[in-house]
Length: 397
Image (cartoon, rainbow, N blue to C red; front, side, top):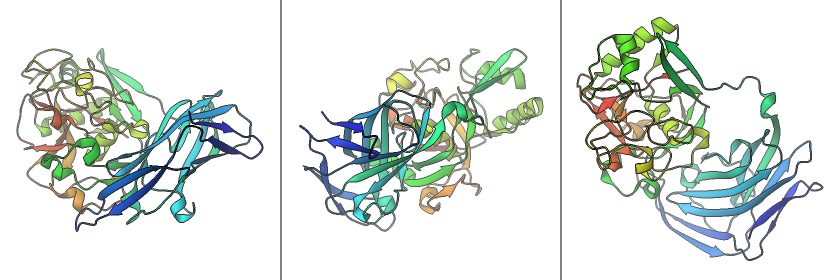
């Protein structure tokens, strides 16, 4: 049992190593011309390296961290811990450091809900994409996690909440996705070894401002209240609208914006993947919300060769439904097979606006195999093509 207890005098959390060995990691790095984030071999040994969590705060709170683990996941190090606190409104700004550089600089290539602004009890997870940050990491090393008190949740008056609006009795629901950064693209450990994923390489860091996104795919009822006619092959008010051109979506959004005075649009490919991945609450699942697609979405194995009403499977970490399966979802970007190799790392709000003959679609659908429903999977369609396997949802800033 590994337990960390808060020491009010020193502001250190002291690690009890009884019956537990933390780890020593040796990383052997092999470069490639295009994708340098490649680990050849990782070795784990049971030695007493130290992981420290430092909390700098102005009030003394009863806290405990337990079940501390660190494991390899593909080209990442996953650090998890269980946080218990008597005050769930407490918010901390969390940074991670590595002993390789004597804890000099905070690590940058991080994702997960255990870094950045962290609040509330429960399991916290951080993923460190090592070789996106440095060319190699060799030898014994340990981590230090530093937190600074940032206040309580109720003190933050400007945090947005989810909202809905109604047009002629038809309800639209949206979820707010807090801005942040994430590692976009293919990860061999998470996504499997598959040539189909070559267009999602390399893994690269993207930063996004916050945005709203539809809680569900646009339904036929929501389409008809704006456009009148229903083009879908499978009929039903709460089924996703399909058999629509990408330009049809833009015409719909133009009319919707005129009615609401808002500025809705198709999501960029980065917005779509960040939301599907769970934003700052991401657990880095293969599919949107789980590694078990049967719980999350409709695909060839369970769909009975048709679409299904939106929201009938489980939501992802942000409470968004059907981002894996049911229908493909149009994105704003033009498709380029090599875009991820061209895009600059650490890009902010970037998307591919260079015209091509195809546009991006994401998420998989009722007629396709499970592999197409992986969050990292990219596909494309002729924007003038229509099919009963393609629909959409929209975003707003």
